[in-house]
Length: 103
Image 1: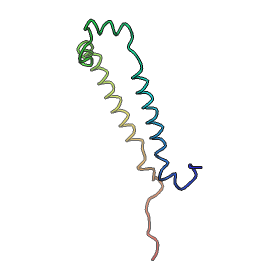
Image 2: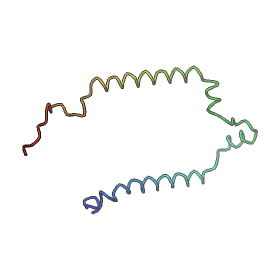
Image 3: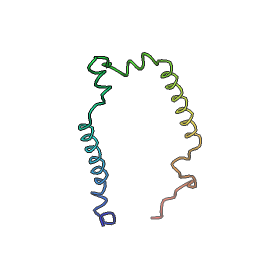
Image 4: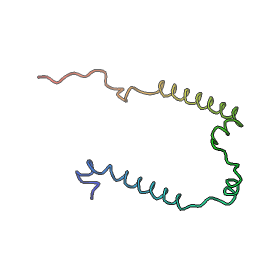
């Protein structure tokens, strides 16, 4: 088997890329074949589609977006502080000194 051979170290990492690339290609192909829904086609034909929808969302929901960004920033800061205060330096807790071998 490939997983237990010496060649797996040199070529085995490519398996994940091949599988991921195949799934991405299949998804892109299926999206190409899909058609838009009838309500979307109607709105599109009437010209009611925004050219920059992300700015339009920010225009109408500015306060909730800013509050969410602040909440995520506070949460990330607290988690990073918790990580720094409870982590051990690289997991080497029992090593106090290393002596070189005798010559």
